[in-house]
Length: 462
Image 1 (cartoon, helix red, strand yellow):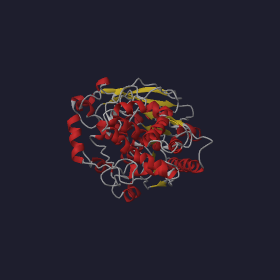
Image 2: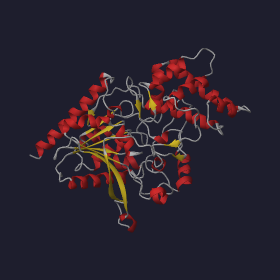
Image 3: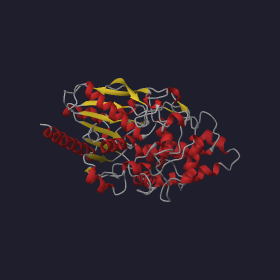
Image 4: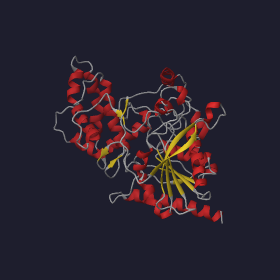
């Protein structure tokens, strides 16, 4: 989100709700697996023989799969800390390439850097290409299994390095931030602290208003330009009106420069929706290539495009031009695959997680720039059962990890967890000369807190 909206203090023992979202909350789907181009990172890849099932002793439980992790020993001294990124829903190289903060601070701490890929994502597929095909295999995909994976791998790594005394701090962003916080709560004997960036741990049950995410996205655009907000808000009605016209889809295909003729108005709707939401999420103060290549402060750039049209231009033509910034800032696309987008980051497993334990209701209020919507657990559960044959457990996350009265609970039993906010884990990005003062201060404060944890740890073991 825009830094002006979400400049929040980092507080120890106190949780700040992240307005980052998870992939399933967007009306965008990836029907085809793309050939993944891995970014170059200063890490060496390894594979760890991991147990399929940590919590049962059935014959299948002892099956081994190979879990990928990345490591950088450049700055590490024996006995110095180990900084671990708890991988989330995607290829681990993607997160390593966009978490320059750890490389920036590693020399200060002489830290070993480790990025662990989440099971069922990237190349860490317990059943190979069949991993995501049915509930029989996907049943081993859960946050609890993932946390246990991290615990086993970290413990083994420390043993193999003959550095059992090295303190571990875990880091994660978005869902990975949730995992980092939960790891500290569940495995305090392994990690002395956690930095959870943009971690929406309160987006479950009714802990947070269900409209909060889309309200915040809308406020980003509204703060930049009221006209921009109004144009986007009014564009959905123009789009819907095309659905009643005989040649509406043909006209829309031409206007949106699609590679193939559209078969549904909703494909165009989802395409626009995804662009506006993801752009708000990665509204970084410097050029970046997290979801897509984008300029600094891309929300402002989108609104400049919308506001720059001459009077009389349709709202739909304006929002298409703005969305094109997201999909084609690099100016390499001659047409858009609106209905046949590919999954370039390996996100397929998230749909299963959303249908089981990660039930995070999100709706659009009348204040949102998106069409008003509601959430029906009954309809959601029926869709999940039809797709996977499973029934979602909407209260499981708060039962397993907590959430209600979170400030009081963390104060009593959850020390050494930093919850940070801003654009989508912006504090984890590499420092640049263009970083605003608030971001520089935020990172400095995070480093100071981690220093404090480590000083206390080394003092205790003397």
